[in-house]
Image (tube, rainbow, N blue to C red):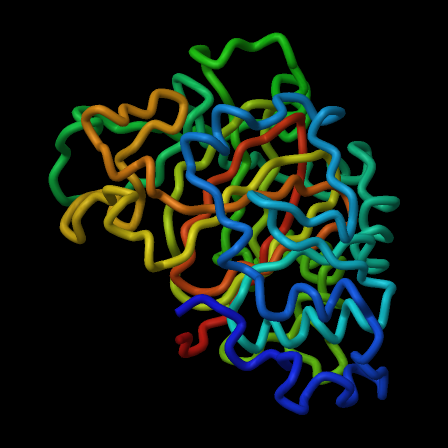
Length: 335
């Protein structure tokens, strides 16, 4: 069940108990109103969400505490009641966004393209290429079938300056080649990426005073820098995940584990297991009538935002402009 079962509920004697830093939850109308309703009452069906979504970064601006149907709750990182509510949502493995995270805004100020070029110019970077704006994970070995009659992506080594020059081209059409820089957890011990680990240590470390520490085993820092219109197809991961937006904007569509069958995921034996076989830009509700019942909600990430994705939740990413983010995962037992 994805409801906020363990969050204080009005009438059960818990509202008014002390929240983070001794802050009482009593009297905060926004928090109290949403305790019983979030997240289930905010879901909407995916065909509606996807067809009606704003397409530009300017149109997609979302206010903090402006939650409505179809939207993931956005809470203010600098509001003590909001942080306390976010902590309870985290404990219950329920998604939320914290906006205006000071540590991430500091990184935003630091991460000029010249700074990133300087840090990553020592050797070529591995860049993922797709013949369109859609990126689908696949692993080597195993069968190719259906949409995967050929490998969906390829990789190439590029100078970081060349990657930045091409990745900032906003005139590339969706059916033309797109680039995606994805540095995964295997950079954890690479001395050339010590700068990245240091920059994100305040939010990714397992230190006791790190608010974003989810417990469990640290499974690395993952850097993502991508072009406008890039899409990472809906899939689920194990463990817990925080995504920190350093610059640019992108949209995340999240769906609870209970919706698994409606996502029509590839089987375990498939190269793209855990990922949907659906094309969100061309949903066929006649072929798949259950899509009309497929429940999800979304948010638009901007610089300074932190998105919490619990284990086994489906998430689909769409870039609204050239952007960069880091995600930190924790290997823990989830519900």
